Image 1: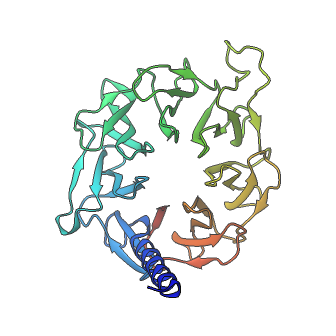
Image 2: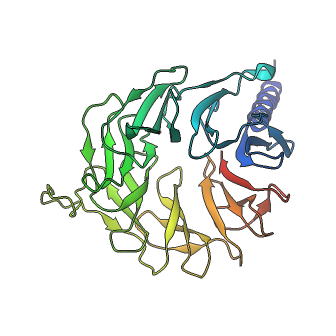
Image 3: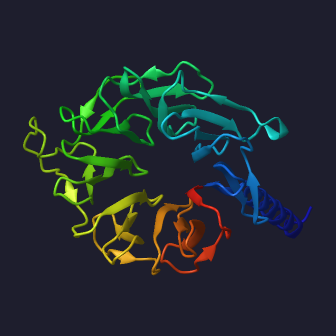
Length: 341
């Protein structure tokens, strides 16, 4: 076989692999277009919306596992929800199963990097609100901590730290703990929430109201928060990245850990901005009179999905990292929200 033929065969194979990867990719979101909240997938290769869950119950806030094989999401009303997992490889059998146990309000599910464990918050009557850890097929989740938890923020990419926030006045702030229940640490001691690890697991970005207005802060993994009474002298501090009179929210790290997407109301309504992880070069990406929010980077860092209420109801849009090439993904009179790659 000649070298030219070998090269042509290799290029053909690579093209088929790329096409396969593209066809298996997609953007997941929540929609109430069929009368209740369900999880949909936009197939990128065909521009087709596929109803993944198809039940009479409300299903929402889906999070795709890193290996793209599982979806975890909330089921039921927001004051009495459970956590379920859907096997995306189950085909027509539609395999799904609960991982929360008992009745209560379960929310904020996040995956570990290996796609085999999930952390979430469970608010159970007479037991308070705690963080739980579960295996994908485990119906008996383990309690991670006795601290009252408002939300689970994120699971570090190295698998070593689950970060969660507490609004308990005695333990107010952001906490981290090893997923096996050891080495707990309180990282901040203010009205802090929305914590997200950088993809390289070296820094933590979060929202804080310690100065009265929701702003974005960032800290290195071993930094000390001056608000904590046990703070020692340290060269690594909590850094304030935004300082406006209007709230910021919806943090999303770029895959290379160099930039942060966020939402700000500094110009009169919710718009999407990007900045360097140092807080420099804050650039507005969307310019609409209606609200834009929930931005999230694609895994390759080339595309940003977000929600816009341009037509008076939430729809899913995409754009590139500079805010250009904006494209509408959904277009209907229903609410399409919570995009996830």
